[in-house]
Image (cartoon, rainbow, N blue to C red):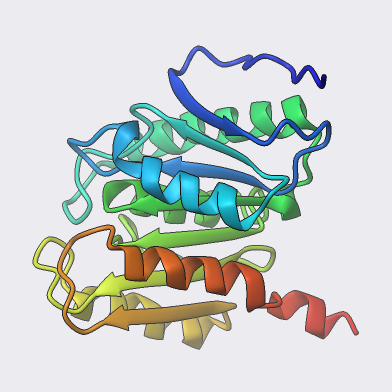
Length: 213
């Protein structure tokens, strides 16, 4: 029987662990403002089914106050710092490389994950943003993090026009990113978006790997 290391963080966390001695990949899921870790349990289970050796962690309270509202630079930096500390601790705990780490966030959780990718390029190899946008405009494209945006066209919390604008700006900066928009969905973590996220994880080879050939 494999004994996995205990969580070194004080953050209350739902853990879906495969039992593998060396889990790969590491998924960290971030819930929306006003939500809880339980909101992402279905997504976590789907990831566990698709990646048999994965470790899926859903921390409670690591998010922003809103998915699409101004946040002070100080508050944003504090939230990003707390998430970065959590991610690094889990990478060390499971001996997982940054490139084998993915952040998946919904709403405000997605906005926080994007902010982390801007402040700490490469701390996670991928960021998947469901129904979220940048809380602060990125000055540059991440070189070591692939970004996947998944959005509902009927989202009234974070209008899709805002996300398309973010995505166009990232393309101008040379980012490695994708955008999937579901025409009939609103601000929701719908199974169709979850399935598309898993497809992106399974089939998209990061652009930096192609450039290295």
